[in-house]
Length: 145
Image 1 (cartoon, helix red, strand yellow):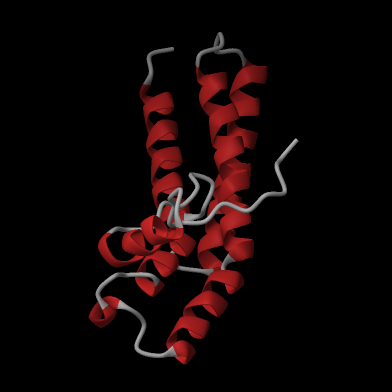
Image 2 (image 1 turned 180 degrees about the vertical axis):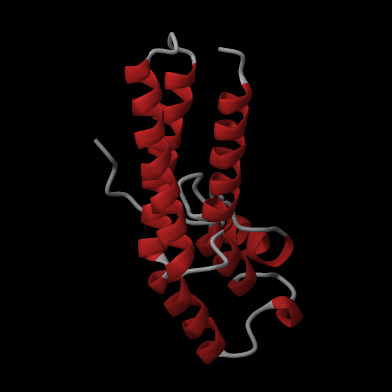
C-alpha cells in the first residue's frame, strides 16, 4: 500500500539543511514523475531565478499544457503494452495464427501511437514508440520463413 505521507523535493534532517538544498541543488523528484512534469517542476524550482518561469502565468500555462497532454500520454502508455506483447509474439513459432496476432497487436499499438500524436504532436514517447514498432515490424517481415 502506498504511504499517504508526502515527500518533498528538497530533503534534509533539519530545516536549515532543506533550505540550503533549495539554494544549491536540484530537486529530487520521484521516478514515477512524468518527464514533462519533472521538467516543469525543475524549471519552476531552479536555484537561478533567471532560469525559472518569467511569471506565475507562464508557470500556470505550462501546468495546463501538462494536464491537457494526459490523454496523449495515456494512449502512448497503452501502445507500449501492445508493442511489448507484439515483441513477445515475434519469438513464437511463425504460424498463421501467430502472424495474425502480431498484425493485430501492431495495428493496435500503431493506432494508439498515432492517436497520441494526433492530440499532442510533441509527445516524444509516442514518436519514439511508433518508430520502434515500425522498425520491429520491418525486421519481423524481413526474417527468413
